[in-house]
Length: 235
View 1: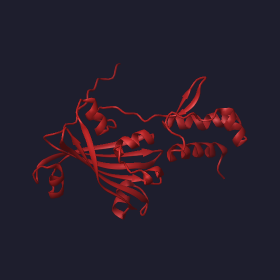
View 2: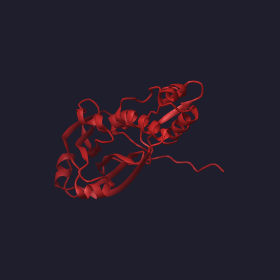
View 3: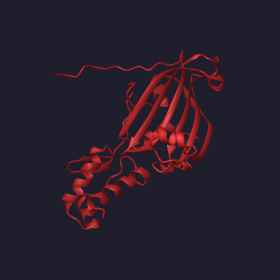
View 4: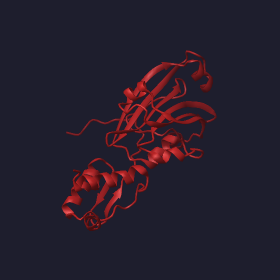
């Protein structure tokens, strides 16, 4: 039997993940939730505290609880959005959707992502162009059970990465950075030579233990660098 605490947690989580409640939206106050679920305010507070620990909501004294806004930083180890990065650096950015398809996750990818085989995904391929030159190929998988609103999003006016950062609060991310050589298709799209050195950033993000998206960015090695400024922890 599911506890009332778990029901509150799951119901609020579902409304956030589905997009019914957007970043900045106010969560019903404790006494309203206590009345709705016929439980004590202590039970409600426990569920909201757990959601806050997961980074899904922000609790503010005297004003209530709100859906958390996604964190956007610009160091190499944090979530980055190419369009925002380019604009902040004073460059012109545009993008093109090269492919968009809803399909089922294959066995190999399902195992790689630790997700169920046959899970429905939105598969995207985009080209990012900075100052008139190809800067990155974005190959992305979005899990539609985690982000159902993506199914009907055309991404005609906003890049997928930026859309996701605005839509879905993430709780965990993993980056892998490596050097790769451009294959024939990559070289053609990036307007470089086959075998040319490229930089690859692979990123997987999760929300509450479930994959939100898996993406690989491939950049021409002579047009991009990863950079970050770090400081030692204070004693």
